[in-house]
Image 1 (cartoon, rainbow, N blue to C red):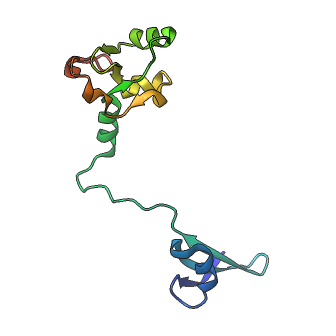
Image 2 (cartoon, rainbow, N blue to C red):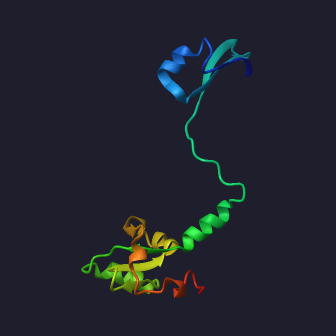
Image 3 (cartoon, one colour):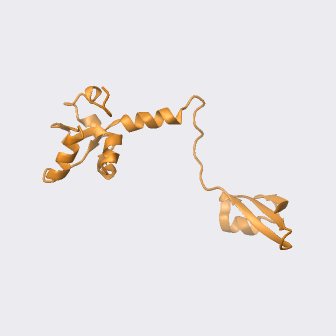
Length: 138
């Protein structure tokens, strides 16, 4: 299919789509399908907008750091099986914070992503997280 005409969102001819899609509309395109001798109208819409990564930003390194980050897990005292599971995975109990501390990667691999308390590890002052084993390394 060949594009025969492209109309920006602020030009005449795009107004009916602009009413429907608002500022998300980027462009309207008319395409010709020679196999069926038809004109097809398509629209381009914006589906996501976020800040561009910094010039020296490395996504792979960022994700690796995030996976090894120490996080706090909220597990109730009566959840014996779950407490044993995280303890066997190397998690440490914080008496002060009342959380189990482990790496984010371990928490997710144990299926405990919903138990992560963001910022909770900062309250666990009785555990030196710099000495915790993360994926077998100190």
